[in-house]
Structure formats: structure tokens, C-alpha cells
Image (cartoon, rainbow, N blue to C red; front, side, top):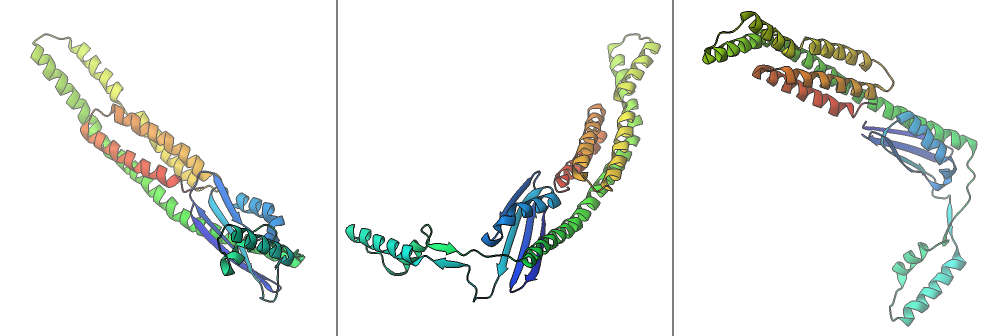
Length: 286
């Protein structure tokens, strides 16, 4: 489910900012950018965010601002000079001149030239970081809850549409039996043969039973009611509703195979269209 959450906390001279973004995904795919000074807590933070969000393609960003007078990194001057002298010597041998800013930026990217100073994080700052992470989680949860309500309202409306369409089938059920009887009588008349009327009525009953969709309609109504019931729950709602939607699809497909009537087939197609939209939306529900 898509969402965004942001929170800030002040810890002494540092302002800590935590941002969480999420996109739809069936599984949890968590990517985190954590400053090196907070790296020792990265695993705990990942677990905290993953447990709270369950699934989705999640991007976690943690940053901090500090006064310009503080330093967390230094240049290894001795190693910098060694690299500089060697690079000057090599480039001179091959006739390639490299000086100034390009050479400096190249050396700064070489191993161990920039040394990160050890920073002791006070307990107060760890608590501020934890509060910022929790604040971002609460913010994204609120965002997702709001989006979830809109999605759920849409889903329930489509379930009601399916029930309404199911009611439109009823007038055509009796009509198709009469259509079947008329067609059989006309075909028999063309053959110009005598028939046993009792046997003819038995055949009509056989076809009535074969095309009867009462059970499918009853089960589909039960699935719709169960869908509404589960929609009011709080855990694993998306998965459960996905299973119910599959069962609804089976009943609708069976109604289509038994329809034997053009108008009923059209209604079934509309029901399938609503159900497909429900399945697409369910991918966004946790």
C-alpha cells in the first residue's frame, strides 16, 4: 500500500529526520539509508519498520543536521600525500597531465583517505532517533489508513453492485425455460413424429435442473456477506478478502456456464468486470 511518513526530533545540537515511503508489493522489500553514526542500530530500526508495515516496497531515509563547527570526518594527510606523489609520477611517465581539482577529487575517493572519526552517541540521542522512527511509522500508518478507507469503500460498493446485478438475472430465469420449451417443441414438430408427452416433460425438468443457478446465487450472496464481515476486521484483511473474491469468481463463472441466455451472459460479464476491479484493488490492502 502506498504511503508517506515523516518525523523530526531534536537531540542536543542535532536535528534527526526520518522519512518512510512505501509502494504496493505483495512482500516486504525494505531499503534503508542510515548515516554511519547510527549504523549499529540499523538492524533494530529495520526490524521495527518491517514489523509495523508488514509488506510493500519500503524506502527508509534517516538523516541529521549538525552545527558546522562539528567534524565527523578528517583527511589522512600522510596517505593523501603518498597517493598524490604516486599519481603525479605515474601520469608523468605516461604523458598524461592531471592536476588541480580532478586529481584531488580522485584521491579523496581512494581507500582510507577520508577517515570517519568515532562519535559517541549519548543515550538521549538514541531515544530521539527511536522517537523519530516511531513518529514516521505513525505518520505513514495514518496515511495508509486513510487510503485504505477509500479503497475499502470502493470495494464494498462493487460488492453491492455484484449483488444488484445478481438480482437482474431473476427475470430472465423463467424466460429461458419457456424459450427452451418452445425451441424443443418446434424442433420436434419439424420431425413430424409422435412423442410421449410425459417423457417430454421429464426432459424439460432435466434441462431446468441442469440450467438452474439458484445454488450459485445463494452461495454468491453468502460470499458477499462474508466479504463485508471480513472487511471490518483488522488483521490479514487483504489475504482473506482475496480468498473470498476467488470463491465469488467460481460462482459467477458457474452462473455463466449455466446461463443459456444472452441477457444473463451480459449480466455475468458485468459481474466479472466488477470482480476483476475488486481483485486489482485488493493488491493494495494489507
